[in-house]
Length: 324
Image (tube, rainbow, N blue to C red; front, side, top):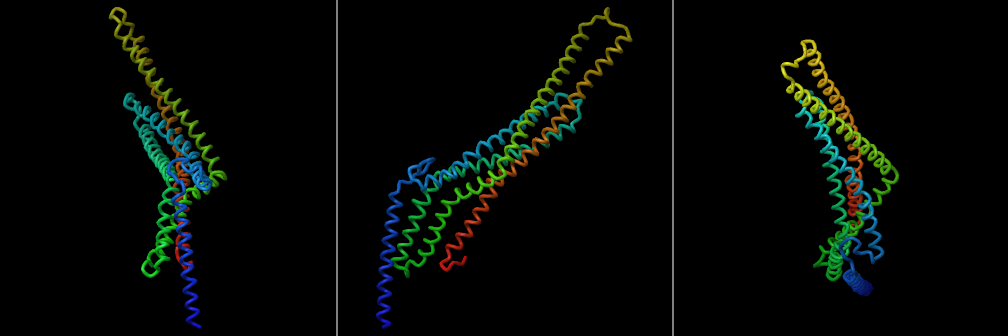
């Protein structure tokens, strides 16, 4: 009886392996014949692939303009502050302290611009990976996993290592393929609930403040130019006077006092404008900090969280007994 039962078990086990290998071969042939291509919209003719890739590509297309606009603002502010910093060289009577504060704020804004540029680079890199991920996972990784599984089914003793490797490779390929669409869906949900309105508000505030800072720059340059023109006219007038037309002592004293007061008034006006510029630049830096935090959260923190979640799923599914 035991012999009959063992023979039947071996018979059905052999049939199971044959059917499993046949099914895996058919799946391998289907994947190899499936017209999966790399490139943007390269798989639009395949419904499932189109849906998966479109989710991630649409998210990248929505986020890139926002990041590009925020990054452009940092460069505009850097240029505006750089022009104001040059006034310390041309107008030496103004204290260096306000310009040091302005320079410190400018350095901070440069750092924020670099962070935004990094986020932009991550999105562009993600877009590139998305365009080739379907081909890499479904045409390379999963077929290799299927071949390894077939070898394991054919000779489980000699190819014992192939079973675990094929399981890990197949599960990993599917999770990698679903990583970017899942990240995009989670991020789009969080953006729709809260972050989109916050980003729009901060962008409007930063843009309006940047325009005010540019207006202050123009006013400061005009004041500095007016002061220079006044000094030039005074020098030209003084040089054209002859000894015969020299006014009396009292007239000369009054004119000298007036000439001394005009530059001082110009300097005071420029000091006030520089202080306004410092306040505006500080407000811009605060707004950019908020934007950087939001974009780092959406482009770094959420993908890392999804990665660790998928890693946990991978460890659970990879173990044959369901244990990590």
